[in-house]
Image (cartoon, rainbow, N blue to C red; front, side, top):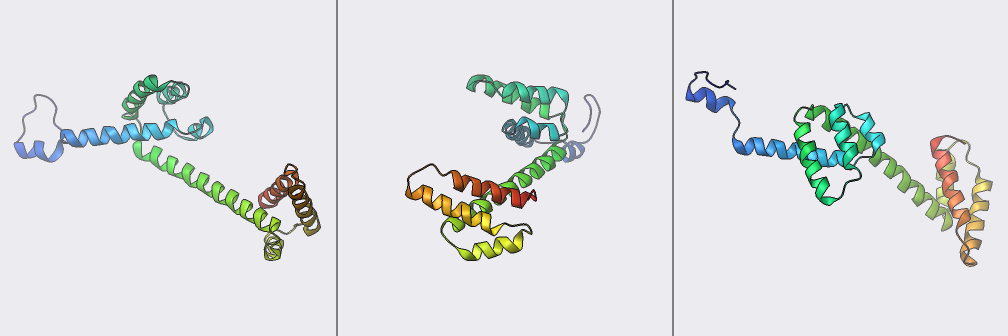
Length: 174
């Protein structure tokens, strides 16, 4: 892009300068990325390589009301101009992938628990091969207790314990 007062041809300007619409689209993309950053918890914000000013602006926005948040979002969009968009976008995608993986693991645990409580013995065999130190006797006891609790309309303490046991197995803590 040429500086103010420099002489150049019309073709030079046409090739290098962005249209007003393109600039608006880019600024809107930065603002949208800032909105996505606002949704992240603080521990995930710490993982990103953000400038101090942007990080503080994001922290301030955490407790703001609607009108103030809208103004703060504009400020964050302005601060995003100085940031490395591609680097932040890549880091944000990595965080999302990690989060999606955790959600899939959680759903798998819920599914195993529900199948065990329904009396599916195939899941028992699958879990036995999946986890080395899988205690079948303990799991069967938890399943029996959970079914009794359902029959007696008691809180599902054993079902929660079964879920925690499966979590520990998956994390390799057992």
